[in-house]
Length: 483
Image 1 (spheres, rainbow, N blue to C red):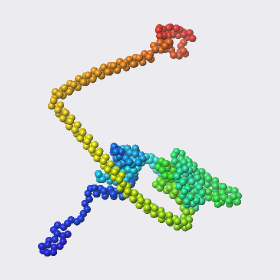
Image 2: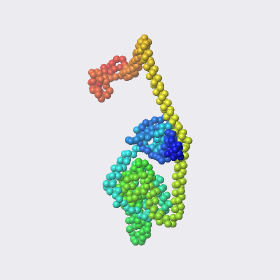
Image 3: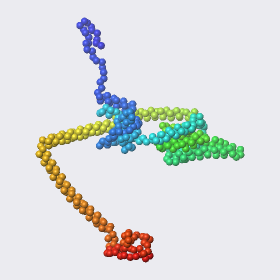
Image 4: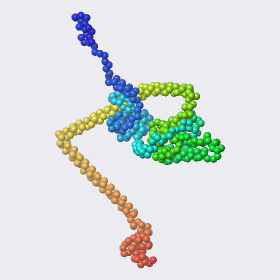
């Protein structure tokens, strides 16, 4: 508002200054949007169908990733070490990992691709859901049949590969948390054809071992039972079925019905720890307890013993927890600094400049091609107009064309005749070489039936008294067969 007048002649500010406002240029607005996207969204995984794929001469690949409702532009720079680069084809359904950013020259957001994965597990997913529904209907997943795990297990059965990463993780955690725990290993394959049958057989073997141990503890005299009481009284406390992470195809052995049945029929509680936290298999639903990872399963099994030691090791654990928190905080700060450094890296700006150069090059090529086409059309139009106003020249051109066509027709006829004669001579020579006269000239003869002229090839077909005719190189001989 204008200031109040001090006198009748002081009218104040007739035109007060406008309130302050910040006006952004297009570049500044785009830069703010770019920073906001890179900070708030950052690196993501996106799935969709590849379309409009094009590869520039610079080696950079540009394409669009779409689904039924939307699409996003993507770029894969030549310098990125990306596997499955050849999988990028129009119509291919892929899973991409990349950084969301804004291409400032156009003012549109895009995905800078860092990783490419193919999607082809739809059929396995359908089979997984069908088997899951079937077993759920039969009651294999019923919560009321889940058995609690013993708080202080002394002996467990382990079903996994003897050379995999899972057994190392489990042993490492158990050694750290409860080294007195006894482990009975039933090795088996956990991937590939026949792995499901081996896993199921390993579970059954451990159950048979458990039954045999309990029978041994209950048989014999009192003295023998007393010696075995502490060592063998409970047999196996639980069975751990585990393997490391992998794709859906790698984990498929744990989605087989034979494994689910073996876990369901086990008299010993079963813990399933297959893959990573995001992986779920049929064995996880059937088992009494599901663990996210092999290491997590080992922690669950040893939780009772480990927790009972916390009052002794409270201070060191608290210190480790604090150090871990500090490390996580430092790791998070380092990740943030690393992200900022990646956004400010000269290679990032160089890639953006190269992308803009590719756009300019494409536009220049389009303009050049369009200009060339326009000039060709104009030249043809002028030629047609010139021919229309000079019929004599057109007549001369048609006459010259007719003379040339006549000359070419004559030459083609001569060439065709020569080629025909040459092929005829070649065929005649080949026919002469393959004819019977050549065989007869080498001293051979041809024997035929004198009546029918049929060539005789088998002596068994000749009858006694039959008239024969033998053809030589010069002349023929008539004879009669006696035998």
